[in-house]
Length: 227
Image: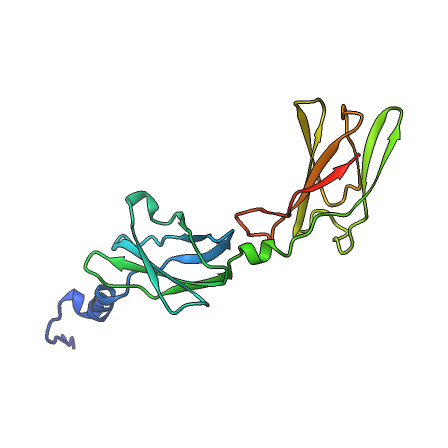
């Protein structure tokens, strides 16, 4: 005996209704991998724009630990931006902790979840703490004058490991009107000053980065040394 079972018919999208409703009300895609790269009273916000084509604008808000005032930057999202790395420069910042937030905004004004990141911003107070490498002596051999520095303490044994002291710049006269410049790493203690004049004054300064991600170099004051 053959039985035929039947019931009320349902449209095929009945089973997908909840999914479709959720898709229509889902928040716009947020940015990914937000970082703050600090600098000298400025910073770069670095992030990846999501692939969600509903996103037409990014709302960037920021404040510092010194003030409750919140600033906002609106950035239009172009077709070539989706899924790509984007950088936003923020200038004229106080030397303090920078607090940032980035939201994606759809064409109809819906906003994504917020991506947040913070970093310390550097400036004159940090620069005032910087000191130059310590000069030791000059020596001369076979007519070549060499400048000697004292050994720096606290440097990593591996020179490829980040250290805040980056390099030292030396400017010395080679004639009455011209000079030469040499840049050495913190691991170099002796540097030959080729073609330097017989007597005079040179100057040098040491260059730092407070953190590896810093977008700016920071300079100690020029120091003059007679020879």
